[in-house]
Image (tube, rainbow, N blue to C red):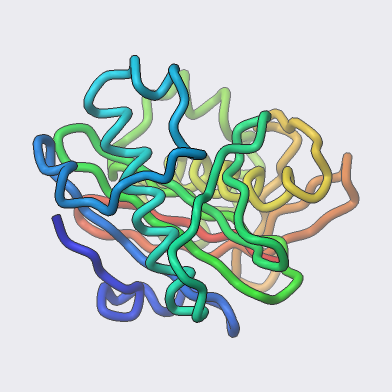
Length: 218
């Protein structure tokens, strides 16, 4: 198990001013190396889940507590909201994501600023055409093609929309479909617009050999 700050991993460009982040990478069978969960974070559903699910949940909380530590906040419980998002401490905005199968990558970002903030991580892979069509419109894909992402264009669209949803849901408590989020690159940078909420939010992306990570903020 390794814990890596975004800066050390070469992902500092994802983080706006005032936002901190941490990555934790954990292989199958190494969950005991992660920080233990707080009782408030554990429920029967988690206890009954498979090793992979327990590993990724635990790695996500570990990454989040490490990120909070960068803000000077002692380790604390980060329970789930009834709708699913993590409940960060009062006056903190944060987001958690995880990806992978035999190896789990968990990432967390946090800030004291009153930002919209969401993060998503995915294993780098080419999406099936049918999946890509459900996730992204032709206009989405045309906009993203200007960024030169090649065959990973639909995956970045998927990840960006996941990050946007994570950023918006805690404030607006509104469920969004993929096609509620329109992706555009008006000046060569990626932005998402959600007409239902009258919100436009910036999206940054990182593409590595194994992982794609997107950060939505506004």
